[in-house]
Image 1 (cartoon, rainbow, N blue to C red):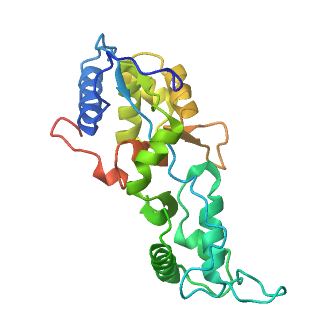
Image 2 (image 1 turned 90 degrees about the horizontal axis):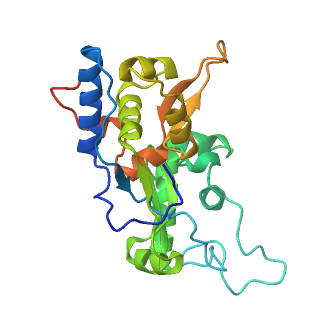
Image 3 (image 1 turned 120 degrees about the vertical axis):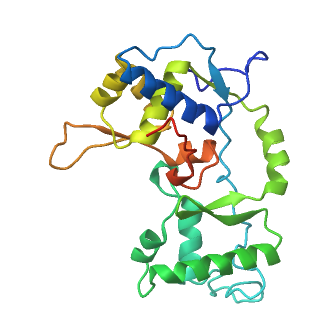
Length: 252
């Protein structure tokens, strides 16, 4: 699987949620019968969406109508008053490690006197100011948190700037492993191997490098690695949470 390979005109349509569910059902059915889940099916492809978090605030992000800043102040005036609103905006602009959404609880913990329940109103106020100022970005809700993202009407400009989106290819074996983790997480490499009937460590490492899977090690058993899907996995498949994964009578 290569995340940097150029698109192949013969590539099939992107991996869908139904394909992921079907792969999991096939693997589970094969493991129940004691056979290997390896498949000769053609590789599937999907195009990872370019990040929408690269939008930068205007030169005077606090100068929108109703803000504490703006023109007209003296040379000693702070053009951007330090407040829960501006602090939250700074957090969203910088982003969280691992490119994960900013959770309300996490944001509130970094500000004095602010409760997680107040973050919703602060986000709404930021979006009101962005809309009033004609900003090309806004705050979106994603995976239980918040992210600063480009507005959809500017996607064409983004694509023109970055050029043609390069595609990553997933082998059928990689789709099988991804499906197992998605439906059975948390799960170890040995458990994935047992379900597929063939060693799966190399594919798991590949999916971790592509940021479709992540590893978590319990504090009391640091040598034991559990695999989980990532926020990037949710974004690529258009999911709000794992509860949105398609279910099938063939999938336990």
